[in-house]
Image (cartoon, rainbow, N blue to C red):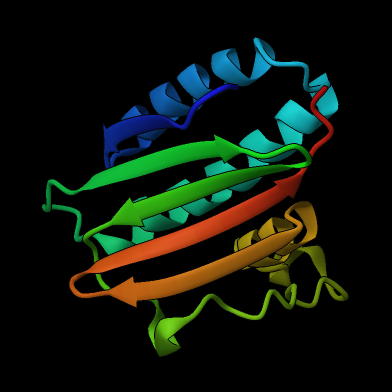
Length: 143
């Protein structure tokens, strides 16, 4: 990847899936392993779906911008949206819900941030004016 690449989509589940498909095609064209492509795609899918579900109201026509930039050993994925700020102005700590118990009492969600944190090398969130900026860094080895 010789230059930054930017993708934009509406904040809907269908449009996020389409953007992830374009992203996967682009990552596959690079010298990244299938495993690394999948890792990046899974973490971004979690983050993007969080934006769709929590940053915008269901009747709001928001957008999400994803910018990729690559360094010698790092892929930086920057997500921007104009939705509401994250509670506490930061991502959750990533503690996974307790799964010890009866199957009927297992939580349906709450695993996303622990997954994102496990799959990324670094992440950083900031509120800038009326927008959100989330940076996910992935360690890669590109020749």
